[in-house]
Image (cartoon, rainbow over all chains, first blue to last red; front, side, top):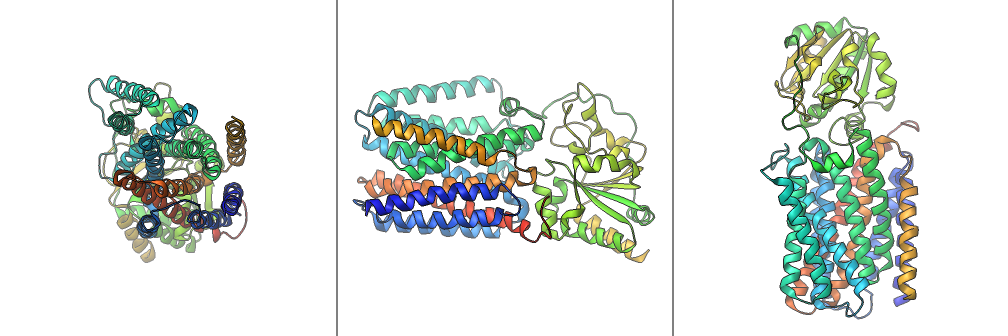
Length: 452
Length: 97
């Protein structure tokens, strides 16, 4: 029986790696997750056959509760809310790794095997940080708390103290066997996850979530060592390494270093320089006329579109324009929205054909020929300030909307973007501001255009 | 000691595997891949089940139970989220981005 269980774990590890490989290419991605899913179910079922286990009733109950709740929540949530769902499920994985370590440490399972105990403690530390850190990330993205960086006096000092305290307690736990010490260790580790995430702004969350994903992978791998389970070691380590790389790739795509992300405080109080000009509003009818007499239109969707659920109305508007013989393209910034690929997924959901979505490098040369560029709820990714040295945005690749003949910016209000920098595009002579909820504004534009 | 070393080699090879599998992915797949790898570390549920299976005192049972619930949620939720994201890539008429 033991060999059968190990065989299934072995196949599971193989299918996980294969699944991940297939997920890294658009054409095979869907089958990749299905294969990994089959492996997951098989591994879970076969675990009931591990010799010498009791509490089977509790096991079944716990698996059912976790599965059903998470499954329903994941199926019901809007596509726009996917990033925070990734965060919370990832955090739960970290919590589970912490729980494994907690039980093993309380039971004194390791005896003289200090190496294994060290790995269990490290896994507990990383997993606990990932657990509470991901919960904060979830709360920030879900709007349960402000997504602005949260700062307080001597924050770095407090964070460092708690972090060092957790490490010290980890050492104490390693060399002693004491329930209260284990409890304090976990409290400090959990607290550090919260403190570490508070000062990080919503704009940097994708990188942070990806980092915590790597953390959880690593924690799972370490706990795999501690309890001698090869499936956990392989899957956890693969995800730990893959997640680390993915985190670095994401940080690079946003032109941020991982270090500056973790130090936080991005976009709190920054001098953005003087902005010349004024905001020039436009009303719906005029905007509709402007679009109707254009021959090339480029749409630039951003997070505001996602929040307003306006992707369907945007597709309708594009359809109406095309029916009038106007060429329509969509410019997708690599980090538009809250995660790389976020806009592609939303627009695909609304039925926009992939050929109409253009990457930054492909669309930027086309802005000077565009009669109208319509910005829907995007801000920092179209801010020309990114070209100027000294701006907090300096160096970030932007969509060159300011080079279009005209720009219409659809926006809820006069607020700044996540970076907290005034957007010079909004003040430009050929830019008109169209205030309102993106979904309603686009809906009205469709109506007006149909009448023209 | 032998098994410890074997485990370290597994660690090394698995880390390289993870790195190689992910390198050179298009940006649009970053989010689905993060979600997919998030699902895969849901295998932690298996470890939590084994630990719960060995738990004796009520405290150990409670923590183990909590761990299994969290692990199962990681696996199930991670799968559902990833699948929904990747569904979007299915209707594509042709390959590439």
